[in-house]
Image 1 (cartoon, rainbow, N blue to C red):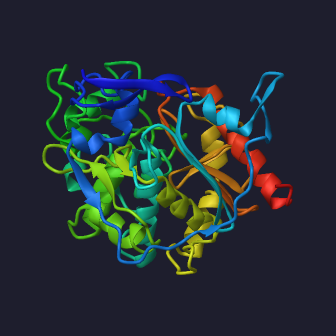
Image 2: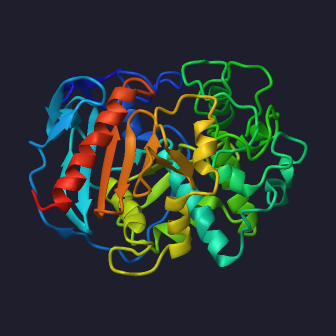
Length: 407
C-alpha cells in the first residue's frame, strides 16, 4: 500500500491510498475512510443524475461549536465541536429554515465529494417508492411478488410492499455485521462487495433475495433487515415498467429536489442496484433531501416534490407502528420510537426523525424547528450507540438553540 499519513480530528489518518483496497478489507482501517469517499474507484456503480436546476441554500452563519451537549447516559458533557471531533466525522452541516448555518469538511472530503451513505440509502429508496405510490404506479398494499415475480416461492411470498418500507416482513435474515455467516454478509458476497467464501451464494442480488426463507409472519413486529430495501429497489423497477431504480430515483426525486451533484449506487454483476446501503452522495444534497420533510414536501425554491400526505404519513406512522417497533426482536435503544417509510423516530416525538447508516451516517430532521442536520463519518466499527446518540443530542441542542434565537 502506498499512502500518505497525517493527523486529523481523530489522530493518525490515511490521507489517500493509491492502490485499490483488497475486497475483504475495504470496510476496515486503514482503508475505510478512503473507501467511503471513493467506492466508484474499485466497485461498479450506476449514476443517479442531477438535473439542470440546482436549488440554492441561503447563508446565515451561526457559531454552534460551543454548545454544551450532555452525554447520552453518563454524567459529563462536551461541546458541539468536541462531539463531532470525537466521532470520526468526515463532514457535518446544519440547515435552519433553508439556510446553511454551519458546515465543515475534514480530511479529504470536499463539498462536491460523494460519501457512501450505507443505510441512509434506505430512506432515499423508500421515498422514491412513495413518489411512485403518489403517481398511482405503485400500490403499497399489493404483494411484493406482483412487481417482482422472481421472488415467488421465496420468503417474500405473501409480503406486501408496505411491509418492505416499514421493515415488517417475516423473511429470515440476520443483520449481524460482525458475523461472517450472517445473511447481511452473504448479500455482500452476492453483489461482489466481498470475496466469495460460502458455497452456493448466487452471483446476483435478485438471485440471492430469491433464496431467503421465512421464519415469521408478514406484517408483525418491526425487524430491521437490509434485504427489505433491496427487494424494494426491484419493486420500484417493476412498478416503473422495468426502468432501473437509479433512473427512477433520479427523475422522481434527485432532479425535482434540485440536487447540486450527481449521486450513484453500487450495482452487482448484472446491474442490480444495492439500494439498502450502496448510494453515495454529496452532503449538501443530503441536506436538500432532509429539507423536503422539514418543508412538508417542498424543495428549497418552493417546488412541490413530495405529496404532503406522504410526509404526514411518515411523521404520523401507521396505527400500530410504535407497537410493532416495541416488539422488535433486537434492541433499538429508542423507547417509544418507531420506524416508518425508511426513517427512524428515536422517541415519542412525532417531529424528529432520522435517516441512519452504519459507520456513522445520519440525516436529522426536526420539522418543529425547521432544522436539518447531516453527518457523514468513518466510525471504525459498524455500530456504536454512544457515537450515535451523542450526535443526535448535538443536533437536538443546535435545533432548539436556533429555534429560540439563542445563536
